Length: 281
Image 1 (cartoon, rainbow, N blue to C red):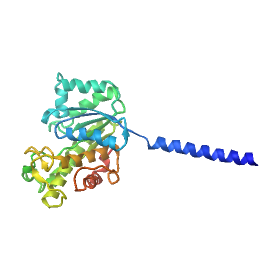
Image 2: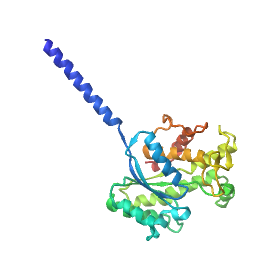
Image 3: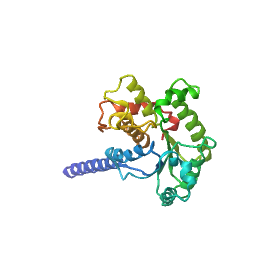
């Protein structure tokens, strides 16, 4: 009888030990091997993602970041500049065959919006057949002219124009077309630019809990120049959007100090909640 009890206790311990090991395996979060190409409206978020992914507990996250300023950072420009170091670096990274996620900016030529993206996806698939693609959607530039730009396109507000840019152009004219051409490849979008629009409106409404100017120094302003390069408060919010988009991190429980009193986690979370689920990862 005593032997039977000992055997039962031993069995229970073994089962609990197995369950504990299984849970440990499930809780281990592996990071992605990523290739990220873009411009100065893309670069801050690609850089910050490396830090946030590690803080969120993703092991072995790594990224190759290749950027150039302005239009030179668009996929089509990287592709056409076939003798440039950046073009060759992108190809070299893809030739290794271990890229899991390939991110590009939404910049394009209106005559053929998907030309550059299509070319790079075709090349990537040669040695990375299971690669996942994302397109980061930036803010519209020159924020001082946002109202005028919206009216030029027949809209009343920058919010309406941004919605058209995200859904009408990037989603409908670009992603939908690319999904037809590459039906076995997952393609999603990251709505980075909404962080600029939302925070700018909140600042206008005096809803921010920080002393922020529209233009000025990076640490205390929305934008650092007339082009619309982003200050830290926008960079932090946009980077949280990237973390949620790529890794699915619950931003409401992610204990990361942005350095601002305004709840940027919640703003980023609301932006992602409003993002069309058909274009999420």
